[in-house]
Image (cartoon, rainbow, N blue to C red; front, side, top):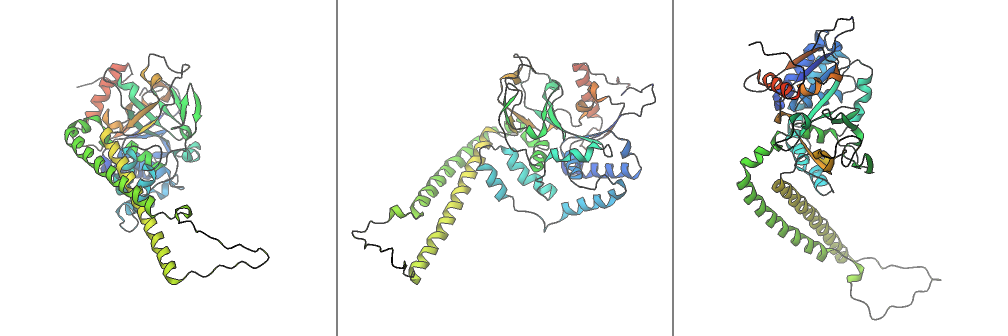
Length: 401
């Protein structure tokens, strides 16, 4: 924000606000225009919230997007993919895979439904794979935003969480972890259990999970609770039914009636197996088909039960806390010290433009270009940022009104 007196080039940050698909398309057009005007190469950081992060992550997943002269073609390619009806994938297989695993939240469901519908693709790449794309300085360095759910008495600054290809963490505490290790189980700064890195489709769901705000849950609390509790009872009954059916129809040798007499087998003679008659073969095929059908429905019922459970608890973006019991990094009086997990949601819950992630002194930002795609007052985010900076003693231009 301060003009430098030396001859070093200014550090420029471009910000994109939240706003769902509108923000994604608007930010895509903005980046394309900056590239057309030969200005994008001068930008150091590019940061986004919600829909703007969808645009950024889609661009950085393209191998040749650093060729700014080809931005118009790339923009058209992304727009056409969003409009395409034929390429849309069925999400239920992925959803079921997630909700039959050990770790899942509504963010998984949101990613494979709403976000998939908006982006029209399942991006199974990793954020850490974008390191090489931005290490040569040809493209701006990307910063993605989220906030954790926190108690009312805590500072808003402590809630902000940033994701970059190299590291992710809390700027307020200056505590980070390698992005590929985010989600691993930590204690005292040591990895106790490694976990695979999140896919980008999951992170896109997390960055754009505006529905995960607590006030949404409070608004629908009574209706949701009655409805979902009823669903759980129904699904529990379905699970029990399909489990019994699966156990009944699964064919096992030890379930056969034992024969009273078995003729001896002479190993010096060739083994002979009588051919299975047509009726027996048909019965076996029918039984196998029914086994597969019952097993599939049993898994569907389990997945639906787990989704309903997440709805009741309103669990979004829960991940292992890398600062758990980490004395070297944070105080024991800090809330994060005692939490084994944290819940991350859309940063638009605080400020709908990621000013807090580019204002810290270590970024050394001289100029911020902020593009707002949200509805309502276009200066709302600036006013909220001014209040945020005043409360947290961060330098910010005074209001000249």
